[in-house]
Image 1: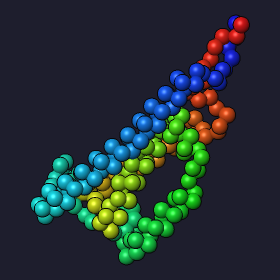
Image 2: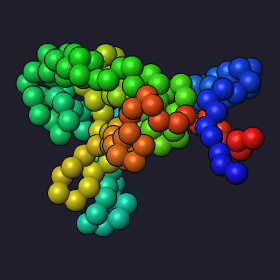
Image 3: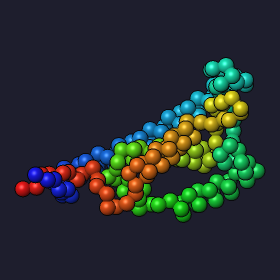
Image 4: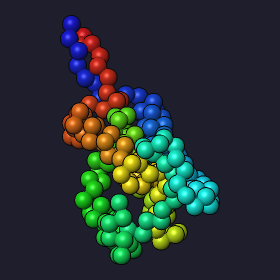
Length: 185
């Protein structure tokens, strides 16, 4: 007895599964934005009020409030708005939109999670740039690297996407979660 792959499943069941996956994707992205914005608001109000870094783990991590008008790690800080627009435009031009949309709608969990983290983090920092003209960073590691929750989400999102691409690929001919193996008669 052998198995063959059947790519059709009852359409109502498939639609509900796809709708639930899409809803979960957007929920994760929006949760990242919410957590990021609440944490930055807290940092602006509380950490900045203290006016000196708060040590969490001596010599390793502290909290300090930094206003970053530039891009990642403060590069192009003299041209923050222009650099932000150029970076966003470049990202939009090089993104594989068709593949990313497929990952969000019928995802392998790793790829969809990575994309949701990446999107939520990017939107969190974009919101800062639109509303404040700069990004609020407040988590400082030894060596002077200061970042925020959105940066963490973007980093883990990229790692998850790369892992998904390396392990599952992006080709349309691979099996989706909706395909099932059934015994041949």
